[in-house]
Length: 430
Ligand SMILES: NC(=O)c1ccc[n+]([C@@H]2O[C@H](COP(=O)([O-])OP(=O)(O)OC[C@H]3O[C@@H](n4cnc5c(N)ncnc54)[C@H](O)[C@@H]3O)[C@@H](O)[C@H]2O)c1
Image (cartoon, rainbow, N blue to C red; front, side, top):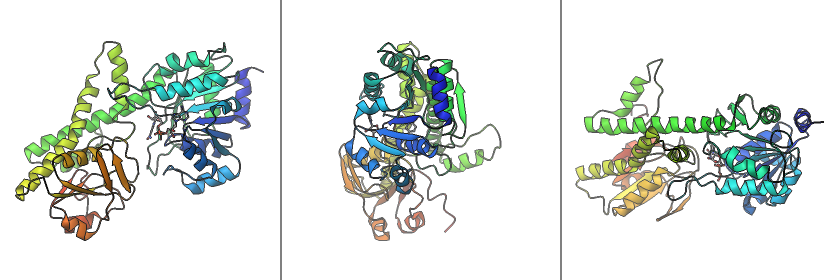
């Protein structure tokens, strides 16, 4: 039987074993969906604490409740290991490792490379490798394919290789791993067919595209689209500020247009592992081809100015109260990069806190999801969000609009508020 036919059969009867490399925000939700579809999953992670947690049935990822993970672990459908040589035991290898930026804002694909090298050590005929990490166009074919073929196996005949971007939106109660359509681009048509067969039972909708480069660009287009549109409304926030117009009123009214407008909202700046980072992967690739991605550059500039803009608004507010920033008590509400999650990666709240500390403010913060901040020059513990704490602050700065926070109390008790999310503006009238 050909390797392709065998894999399709093993997708049909769910006897294919999945290996998920990297059990983080992307990998663990994927592992759970794959196991729920009936496959057996062996997760791989370099962090022993993550492996031990998963083997104990305890989830470290907010979107995967322990109540969902534990029965799958107990039933033997999910287990985890840090022993990468066990990659030889699995049929499908989904790579979900980080793709950050280096200090110089160039792609850091070292995690993908090291996962690929681990795969190359044990690769055997009949295995399928699918890269899920966001990356620049060409990574799957240029970086992974040579590793996977290093033992003389041929992609598309003996082994299969595809790119399938993870689109998970942590904390989104509606769109999760399973019901978000899954794009798949195989290196060859057979690679695409095999991945469609294997992922068919896992996802509600599959979107096959003609190549891994197309699939890699789908993800970069989606996140660049968000970055550019957020950049546009963040610029509009600065325009409105200078014109003395309420930007949220303008956006809400514009959003009543039933066609041709999509609502984005201003904020403290970009955060998370995707939107501030992914467009730079494309910009980097295009620089190598002598093309400047202008929208990406401009949006990046505007978005990264936002913490400074809000700190300036705060300073102007305090000035009206005849207070300098130095020595003023500032209570920052929310530290995570967006509402209802605990993820601090690239959070603009951290930039705001750093700027305030540099200017001599006495900063405290409250975040129900983040008990401690130990980040590059910031060492704080979350304080309770009490009426007394709000009253004691010279200014409250809302950085994250977590649903559980009592913004009505903040409106009632605070002397001065800088609200980067319009959380108070969305409250019913007092
Ligand atoms: N977090 C998101 O919202 C999101 C959404 C869509 C896509 N993505 C993309 O998915 C990828 C993974 O992101 P994440 O947020 O899950 O990262 P993460 O940091 O939460 O998890 C990655 C895990 O991989 C492990 N790891 C790193 N190198 C490894 C290796 N060589 N072998 C085995 N394990 C290894 C780490 O220990 C970590 O547990 C990135 O490319 C990211 O851009 C993330």
